[in-house]
Structure formats: structure tokens, C-alpha cells
Image 1 (cartoon, rainbow, N blue to C red):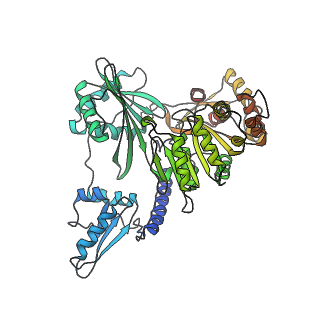
Image 2: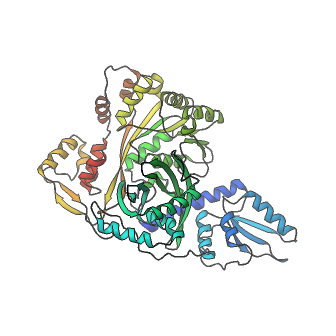
Image 3: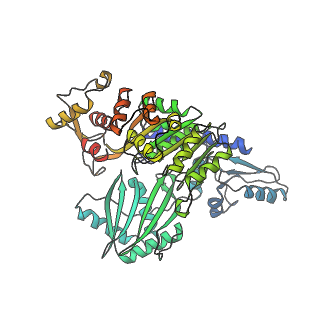
Length: 551
């Protein structure tokens, strides 16, 4: 199963993950209750046993307003309702007046979103769809594609859109691609970072799908311009539910309008640095840097490398009642309780630099800029980071050392930048081998390559590694895991800005390049992405081929 952006959980089984997630959510809800002056109610001990209060509110009304009746009132006892942070405040006032006019008191209790979903599953159990599950196909696997295509052709018209979304979520897909070919429509899903063919559908079924997409995501099927839209869907599975956020992008092509649906299985409780699979050293370094009240932290890496997830996890670690946190994003991928998130539409002429200058007047403690794309944004972020603000941002570069070279190309050598930048993190996501992976001895060429990259590491990091007898691992393909991988794990390179690195940025050292910066950082203890990747392969987390694919 893929959790959130990565699918990486360290030293925790499923039940522990669920418990931690719920604990975090209940704590956040309790804090929210204190701020709103609404009594908080922890329902975990009775949410599956308490008798349902029927006949007070209609089911659609409960869905629409995020409210659940707890007790039916009369002259001797009050009406009691459970609400969430999404319940309209106007509704509380309306219900209070409605029942007080009859002489009956009304009590409201704040519950978590998870608790609300449990109650609603009891009030309104989901109707199951009995169709074969979708399977993703390997290269050249026409039989699987034909089978899935047949299944999609059998799904009833009104259910085909929801069925595809449900199945994509079940597979842990991050994207659904709807592509117009000459004679048919191809559907592909991105699972664990790789695109896989799923099915081919005819034009009629495509029009049904796009019509549903148009109405839900507010995009036009007749437009000859690229469009962006957004929608949400509740996914019900195994007695529980979660909210799926879907970002929609459409573009006209030679044969018709293509669409990409980006799926975000949002779970705020999993935005936690402890759950990202970081080593103790990596975690300690990040926490030490972000604990300072000012400075600039950059996340670098290609699209789809998990930068946003790591940034959001940093923000969540900083998200306390004594800090004002503001983000500027294009678009906002996940809504986080307690953080002011501002959308910046760069396509419509918006600017990160202009937005940043505006939010600095709002007295923030922490600011996240979705991406530094130009010199104006870079200079504004740097200025903010030395005037009492912690600034987090992403930046497109292949490695942490390359980020400095690119930034210098963008703004020139800059003593202010040298004093502001504290940490650059470069990361990649690699597919994670299943537990029944296949071990094998490394070839002589593989041994030579691994030795050349790792031999200069500190001795304590090479404990148990015999460069003459190395073991590597290959995927074990099964019906449950047809590619031998399940989820992804992060490989992270952290460059702590030392005095030596600052001298490069200030311009004290002439004729610098990426390799020079990298070598200097390694002398201070930094492990490169390549070194981290090879150590991960030797541990059996992933394969050598997978490391070569992403680095």
C-alpha cells in the first residue's frame, strides 16, 4: 500500500500507523476545540457501540454539513450534536435558535474527522460494487490489458468514473492518465513512480468519463485550451474511509482532449518527519535546523521526488499555537489545520515574489514558498530569511551541491545568501522491494562500482560490508506484487552549510563548480545521493537498477 506521497513507514506496522494517525488527529481536534470554545469529545471508546439517533437529521444533510446527532432532546434533556471543524458556524446558530424556540437546550461537541466518518459509515453504509479488481499490466502484457478493458466496458455508465478512482486508490496510484490515440483511448496509472498501462476504452466510454470529470472538476470538455480543476472523493474500504484529493489537468491533443488526474491520499497525521524513513542522524539534522527562528532551507529534486511531502512534514513539526505559519503554493496540494495557505496562480499572472512580499507584512514566523523559480523570488526569500523568518522552499536541481551552483547563476555570489542558507536537502524516491525479495551475489563489475563509490566512507558506516563478497537483491514477482515492489522509500542527501561552503557562496573562492562544493561537503560528513542509494541497495531496501534509474 502506498501511503501519501511515498509509501514509507519506518519500524511501524499497519495497526501502529493507524493508532498514531488517530492519536495525532484527536490531539489536533482537542486543540481546535479549545480555540473555538466548543467542548471536545473523544469518541474512540464508544463510536461503534452507541445507538444511532434516527429521525433527527436527514442523511444528505449530515453529509453536507458534517454533523451527527448524538441525543434527541425533549423537555427533560437537551439535543446533542457532534460536529467537526468543517461544520458551518451558521448551522450551529440556526439549530440553536430552532430548538431554543421550542424551549429545548442544544449542546454541540467537536469530534475528529475520523470519528465523523465512523459514525457516517454506520448511518449510511456504502453500497458495494461487485466488479473484478483492476490489475496493472507489464510491458507487452496484452492479456491483462484486454481483461481490464473488458471489465471497464461492463461497469455501469453511472459508476465507471468512481470505479476507476476507487481502483486507482486501491492500487496506490499517484496519477491516472487518459490519453487519446488514433482509434482508442489509453488509460495508464502511475504506481510507485512508474507508468503502467491499464486498459483501452472506446470513444463512447471516454465521453462518459470526461463528462463526469467536467461536472465534478469544473473543466470544459470542449475547450481548446489547457485547463486545471480540482475535486474530492470519499473512498470507502474495509470498514473505514479516507478523503482523496484529485487535481485535474486537461490539454487538447491531435486526437482529442487528454486528462491527467493527480491523486493525493491526504492524511494530515502522516505528515510527520518520524514517518518518512529518515535515519536518526538525518532527522536530528533537520530538527536542529528548523528549530532556529530564521534561515533558509531548500528542498531540491526532480518532479515526483517527494519534495512537497518532506516540506509539509517540516511545517507540521513546526505547527504549534505560538507560531504563525504561512505558505504560498501553486497549487495548494494539501490543506493543513492551523496553517494559512495562500494559492498563487502563476498561470494567471501571480508571482511568488509579490506574494511573499505581501505575507511578510502579516508578521509570520515561518513561510513556505512553493518553488523558487526566478531571481526576484530568490532574493525576496533570502531577505526574509535574515530578517527573523524561517523560510522553506523547493528548487529544481539534481543535487544539493548543484543547487548552490544554480542559485549563484541566478543571483550571483551574494554574502547575504551565504549567511541565510542553512540546509539544502536533495532527495529521490525509489521503489521498495517486498519482504520475499531474491538475494544474489554481486557481479565483479557491480562490486568494483560499489567499492569505488563507498570505500572512502567512515569505517563505522561500512560495518558488515565485505567489498569482495557483496550481496544484492532482485524483485520477487507475485500475483499480489506483480513487479516485486511495494511502495517507495526516500533517499536523502543533506548538505549542512558550513563555513567552507559559505566561502563559495560569498565569492571568496574563484572558479568553483558543483564537484568542488560536493567534495567540500563530503569532508564535513555529507553522504551523496549515490552513496545513500548504494547503501540502501546493500540493505535490501531496493535494487541497484532502481538506484541507477532515479539518480
